[in-house]
Image (cartoon, rainbow, N blue to C red):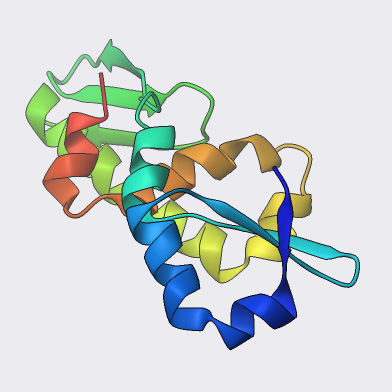
Length: 135
């Protein structure tokens, strides 16, 4: 993908945004720095395949404990639906922490690969949408 010059992007900011939102993603370069501008719709489509697999254990007291594969998130709840909701809430909290401290998380070898998952959660419009991502 050929990168546009940042100076040209600044001069034609409105046209650039229109092109990204209504057209296609665009790369921009400024000196040695490169960025990718992408609309939220395009980003959601790009991350459309991100799903979470819940592993469930039934406890002696009748409750269920669940974890999400690939993430260090574990919750306990009285039933499966409550467990999915609790894990969705934890996903939202984790994704907020990840983005609040992005340089630290993205630089951590054991957390870097979480980026697509937490970005997908950040793009969700509701807690219910996050719940729907959990299989």
